[in-house]
Amino acid sequence: MSGPYHFNLGDSMKRTIRSLLFSAFLLPAFAVQAAIVTGTVTNRSSGDPIAGARVIITTFDGGTSADTTTTDAKGVYSFDSVSVGFHSMVASMTGFQPSTGNVNAATKNGSYTLNISLLPSTGGVSTGMIVGTIKDDSTKEAIKNATVILSHPAGRGGPTPIDTVLTDGEGRYSFSAVPASTGYIVVASAEGYANASNSNVTVVGKDTVSAPLSLKKLPKPNSAIVGKVTDAASKEAISGATVVLRKRVTSGATLIWQAMDTVQTNGEGAFTFSSLAASGSTFPYSLLVSKTDFTNATSANIVLAASQTDTVNVALVKIAKGVMSVFVGLDSTGNAALAGAEVAASLNAPSGEIYTGTTDAKGWVTFPSVIAGSYSVSANLLGFVSKVAARTVTASEKDTGYIYLARATAQNSKALSGLVRDADGKAVAGAKVILETSGANGITLSATSSATGDYSFSGIPSAIAGGTVTVTMNGYAEFTAPVTLSGAASFLNVTLKKATGIFSIGNGAYKLRLVKNGNGLALEFPASASAGRLSLYDIRGALVSDIAIPAGSVRAALNGSASGARFLVLKQGASAQRLSLPSAP
Image (tube, rainbow, N blue to C red; front, side, top):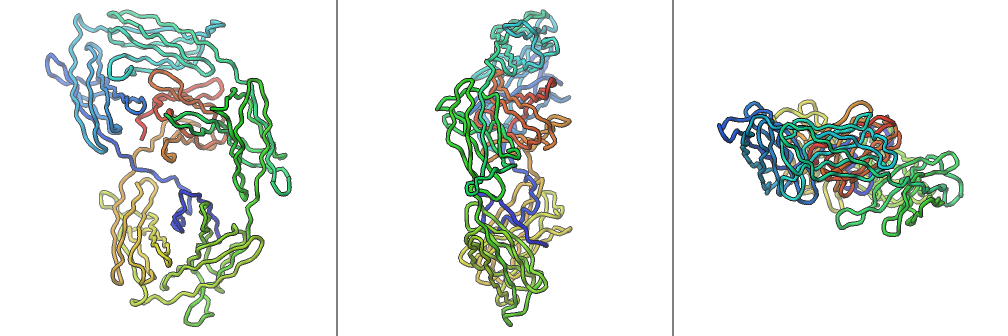
């Protein structure tokens, strides 16, 4: 390993020096525990399976969500990412009357079966159409790219979604092959408008039913927040600082901060957030400001009145730094340099700073700019017993430390090795394997599995009785297991399971992925994406999240009730794309 290198991994990634494995910041896939619901849709009169029937599963526990599939040639359907809880099912097919059922997915990874039979419609095929135009309530002009959702009151707890479309350039929409029934619900929504609905649409026979809707325009937000970011000591402007605009919102019964927009300060340290809605003291705005080599800062709560421009200046404190030099030598001589030793300095603080490098021919490695504070410094070299030492770096000063390693023998060291395989028994090459031990002399070692899946650790101090092995590989679920180090050599074989739950939707510039975001979810998209908006709607057509996407953004968090969103609309200029979200992991 060449070096030195500097990693800022944050609280959640600390775990002493384990984070050395993240030499490339690849997003790890994550395992999803979900139930499976399957069944067969049949003709109630003949018992024959019905191919091509539409089946919708709806959840009403902890937030509304839905998913849709169709039966195969044998009438079989399957949902493989069903959350734990009570679900309502509805099956429909042209020429048959819709039928509902309920299923309780009681446990994660459980498998449940619900067979549904459909009664043929009397008098042959009985489906009609629902059409309409969405207009501005004031100007009567057509609204294009409005989202229109068709639902039916069948099911437990609320409407069951059937379909969703976007209006065309003339504001028109249509739903075809709608089974004859009463009580259909049509909900329309568009950016900048209040939702509108018609909850009593009846389809009779093969009729075409008109259900136009008018949307009332919401007042255009015209407040703003402007300001300047400066160095707290020198008072000089800081350009290129990241300023995140946040707003307090509700997530169930909890108040949380939701990121609304992000900008970079200009050459004079200035930033602007415009076209903001007014806010009260319960749901204020706030700024989170960050810049490399500075401590993050958060503004006080910002309450905006309509048509108000509020100036909020933020000062950042520069992080105190110093220099650390480490010599690694052979303990039998006290002076013989050991070249090629891997040295890792881990800051003993929540920020989790880690600096790594390799000793040169004279046994030295220098970290020229490290955060002032106390460190745990480890030295590792094949054929020697690994060792850790404590060091302290003072601001604007140089700390020099010495670590001496003993040659590894059967008496003073232990070894651990094993194989990394996938579920099919095939070797997994390139997996990162981390051994962590605890205690006063605890160490952290890293290795990479070979082309044959082998990994090994040597030079483990003999006093260490055990630890934890963690294995990560892009596309696989993380593996973690305790290991006991008994005797001179121990073995632990690892089986990695393919990760599920990360999926892509969309196309072109906006190719999205749904990923883990703490305890919630986030959508990730290419940094090359141009500016736009991301709007998410629940099955009733209510807007649950509307996020501005600055050009070059890579992530948008789905906080609070947004996790119950079922339809997504991406808007760039005059174009829009409607996408259905799969069941969230």
